[in-house]
Length: 207
Image (cartoon, rainbow, N blue to C red; front, side, top):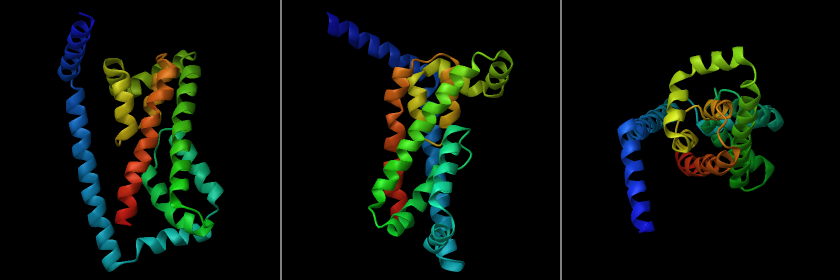
């Protein structure tokens, strides 16, 4: 009886997610990600063939920019608005690992953890922002679509933002503003770490 009730709840919840458009959003993001990957492959191929080796570019960055500044920039980006694609930092980590003489996956892990913590920091900032009505209302109006998605799908939307090209830090900021349970954010944020390793496998293969 209990299992039958659970199965019915699962089915009804699945229908709710389907009806409210979560699966359409997922499909749209998968398509967008596929297009981004295709464009990236084409751009890298053209640059490699006619201009300069992308490895040389990132090696030049490694040789001329202090790693501390790069990690600081990355952490700020992952904590506030996420304006810089994290994939650039993943590509940077490979020549950086060679420079350090360590396994590149340790640096990918470091980036993943920093991104995870950046999302948590955004969440905590959101908690504080909720107590400032003017700022709170401005952010909710400015990011109304994200706010609606978060209200509709909660944790499912956070996982989607963690895995796909969505503004993860803004999603976690709004989650904090709307009093989303922090214990669930701590668990669901692990998908952000998964994203870095999955993307790294692909990006290391390209570059």
